[in-house]
Image 1 (cartoon, rainbow, N blue to C red):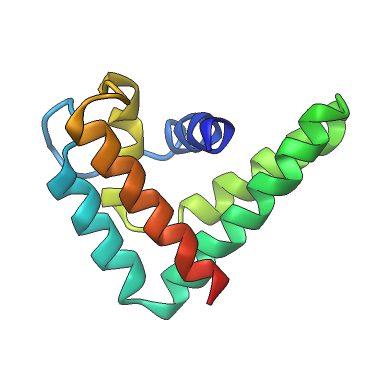
Image 2 (cartoon, one colour):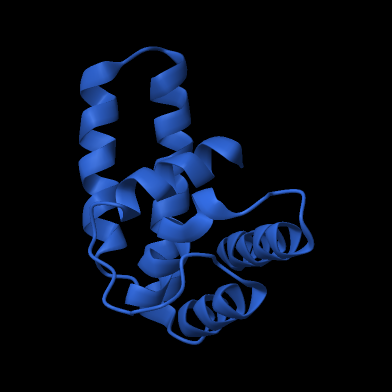
Length: 120
């Protein structure tokens, strides 16, 4: 999960967030993103495709396969553009969240719930 979060942040940082929102992500932001993605089959599929690419990225990173890593980052970036701007805004604010705080744990739980949609 840590690598996924880091990669998401790096990818989403290249996608402009259109929403003007505070610097910190909250449980309500995460719930809004979950609702947007889970209620739209195309966005759910895009999120799941990103999750698969994250797995491939972890593998390529472990093998120090830099060319493949670059290709995977570009694919992830393209997919990220298809998700809601709220997703980009949420993930861009994740570095400001204490992962051990209540909000941090609830946001993490929301991402886990999104991951479960991919298993269905």
